[in-house]
Length: 86
Image (cartoon, rainbow, N blue to C red; front, top):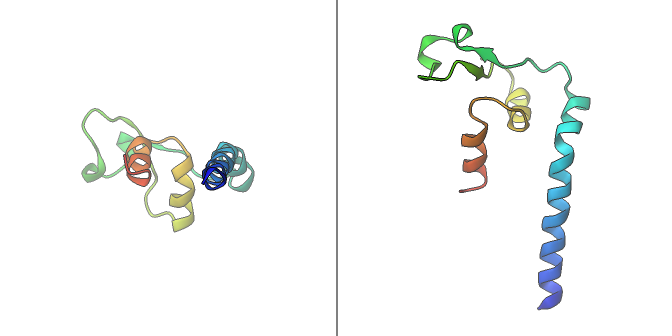
């Protein structure tokens, strides 16, 4: 039983180490990703009250949106709380 617990803890630790390396890997893999947009650069129906920056560009391919999981934008907390089930 102790071995099983240590194995699980080891896997979690490895995962956390790999997560810490993601920002550097993103910079190397996709340095040309578009930045976030201002409120005036997105259609009205995507705008949120009191949110003036941090919008992700529209009409990008799936890879952009996947990689944007690891960038800061106005929905970062929302996305990660759903992914981690908080």
